[in-house]
Structure formats: structure tokens, C-alpha cells
Image (cartoon, rainbow, N blue to C red; front, top):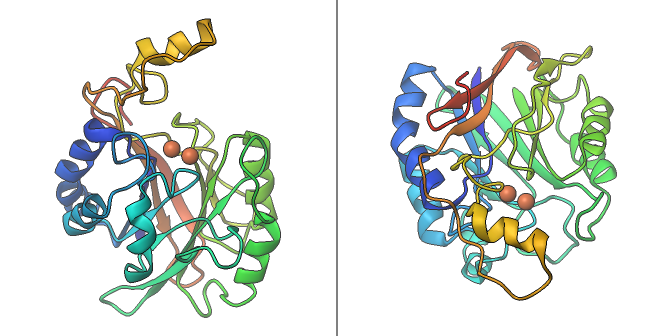
Length: 267
Ligand SMILES: [Fe+2]
Ligand SMILES: [Fe+2]
């Protein structure tokens, strides 16, 4: 099975580039599934329901969120009607939406996608490790589902690596989101789980993590109410991870970074 995971879409630049590229990517890379983090798709903060609809219509199969999940409050009334839009699994009970989804492909194969929020330097949440272990107790790779993708949304590289090693051999791919910078540690772990610490963003890299560099830099120079942050609007680089799994075991047989368009070195 071939799966593409794209990192955080930031603002219009990222959104338009993703919408334009999705149909071509699906065909050229012969993709079975496309998963995208969309927590910053609406002007850098959150995801408006209409934009979620547009991404699904363009070919996204699953959208994940993150700490910006509820920046657009309208999403609270939308998420329960769209099972393929997921928020962190380790939000407390009673939070709208779900932290995982199972997609059934036209050929009958099933893919479990989950997202957790990391805890180091992040807002309070339940334990992502134990919540993942609990979920994976109900879904066995290669037995009840054909692939499992886990998006760990967080700052700390150490926490993401520890998480990946904890579930090595039990999921197809662990990929990080949230930092908006792609890491160069793409690999298959000893147990067969593909891993990259952060997928990077889909946005303009002539920026500070996707936001206008002038206003963002000013925040480090002085402590005063300043210009509102807005997404940078130059040409976007799409960043993500391309995964190929073994149809029998669900484990990774190949993984590579994808960087397309914009100013980053292409891959
Ligand atoms: Fe983000
Ligand atoms: Fe985030």
C-alpha cells in the first residue's frame, strides 16, 4: 500500500499548493491514501469547515489537527459529522470529535489513522503513550487492519522518538507534526515501523514557521503588543513522507521524504 502524509498546511499559500497538487500526486505516486495535517490551514490558525470540505474534495482521505484544533470554533460543530477529520486522541473524555479513524479503501483494505498530542512544551493533555497503547490493544497491524499511521503532534524530538520506538513493529508509520520544519531522519526502525520526527509544513519557507517573518521576528526583540501574525504568502513547499507498506504485514518496506515546490531543496 502506498500512503502519503503531508505536514501542517499553513495559510493560503500552503492550502492552494496542496489543493493544486493533490490530484497529480495521487496519480504520479500511485497513492492508496493521502493524510494531511490541516491545523493551520485557515489563515495559520485552525481549520474552517469549508476548507476541510475543499481538502476532502481535492482528494485528502484523512485530515489531522493538533493544538490549533479549535482555533476556528465552527469546527466544534462540524467534527462529529466528519469521521475522517481527527483531533488528538489524548484530549480528555467529552471533547468533541475522535482521535482516530479507520478508512476502508475501495479494495477492502483498512487503514487506521490516529493522532496524539505530545506533552513536552505543549498544553496539558492525557498521556499519549498509554492512550495509544490502549487503542492499539484493539487494532492489530496485519490482522484487523492493513496499515496504521500515527501522527504525533509536538515540539520535542526526544518525545517523538521515544514514542516511535515504543510502538515499533506495531504501526506502519510514526510521523511528527507541529514544528513546521522537516527533519532528515527518515528511516525504518528495527521492528519495521517507518519514522520521521517531523514531516515539515506545506507553506512558504521564507518565513518563521510559515508566518510573516517581520512580525514573527519582532516578537523576539521586544515585549509589546505588535503586529498580528499572518501567514507568509510566497510560493509554498509541500513537505511530507511517502510510505510503502508490505501488504501482508502492514510494516514499512520503503519510506522517503517528499519536498516539492517552493524554496526548499527538492526531494
Ligand atoms: Fe502546525
Ligand atoms: Fe501545532
